[in-house]
Length: 224
Image 1 (tube, rainbow, N blue to C red):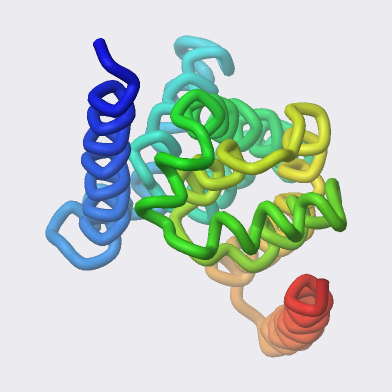
Image 2 (cartoon, helix red, strand yellow):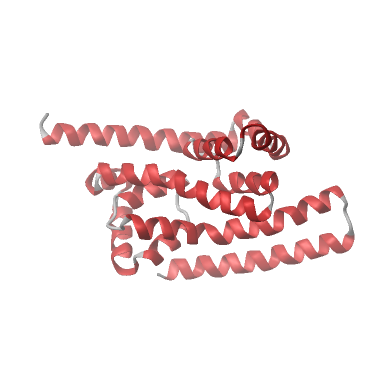
């Protein structure tokens, strides 16, 4: 097979994959499939699976859902509510790394040229940022995502970033969102089950602080 034809086939495969991922991401948000992601029902199912089949099966389903472009924030929330704050946090960080690795490897295999032809100058800009900032660039991209999780990993795979800083940056970039979810979700659930004015005031105050911290982190990420 000639190199141009091989490159053309890789490009077509990449285009099909990106269209599928974006289509799935939109479907989970705007189509009737969104009903399948009812948090209370999913939490009950996750708790039952963890009790009956163990955490290994639950982790495999977490990774599969992430690869199918189910929002990572929802998966983290479900893990925290099903397993508890600290186990859910650790589970989510491990699952997020396992979700990220295949699409990163695919981007590395396809190469910068193929990904660049679809993503345009963004790949070059990201490559330059990675060359300057390395690990911090991966953290910044994770904090300020410009596309679905799997697509961002695919583009990162086409840059110069090595496996170690990618995986570490992925965990560090996920940590603020996952950590806040692990701490805050049980508080909100407790208020839904046993509401009180003081409790809701506390939750709202924390949400304001989280929003401010998130804004600050994203501003820092954009300044790199």
